[in-house]
Image 1 (tube, one colour):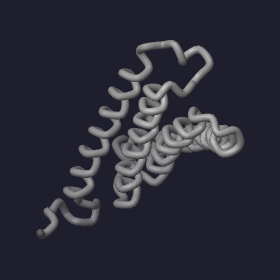
Image 2 (cartoon, one colour; image 1 turned 135 degrees about the vertical axis):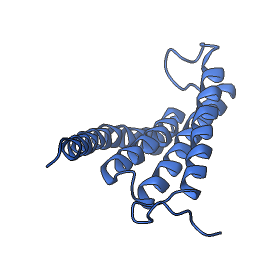
Image 3 (tube, one colour; image 1 turned 60 degrees about the horizontal axis):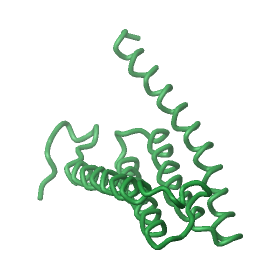
Image 4 (cartoon, one colour; image 1 turned 30 degrees about the horizontal axis):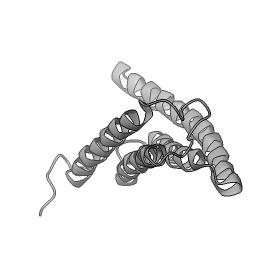
Amino acid sequence: MFDRERLISAHDRKQRRSGIKLIVVSGLFVVAGLILFVGTGEPVGLVALLFFGGCLLVGVHLVMGEDRLAGRALLVIAAFIAAAGCASGAVYSSLGFQIGRSWQTAEYIVPVMIVAAMLFGGAGIVSLVQLVRFRGPNDGGKRRSR
């Protein structure tokens, strides 16, 4: 194997390991959010469920690889789900619901959640544009016909 091929394969393995770790950790937070939201009705459960659900999809994207159309589609969905999680946190906080024990009185939570929702939403839009313009590895670099 050439050095370049060895580097690429090492990078792919490292990316897959990172994706698996992200799936495991995010999965734990998704389960915790589901228990909190369904079991107790805590709004922080929905925020955790959506945000870490997006993180879980990013982990699946890392395992699948960027050269697949499905992996890129997951990245778009993940960004919009994480944006929805942050937006729901902003809405719940602005309505006076307690998102966290010490966060209820923190006046910076709503603006931080709004900025995070805008950043994730923007990332979703950029990822969607890249998905539409995606050329797979077997296309030979040709643009898709419209």
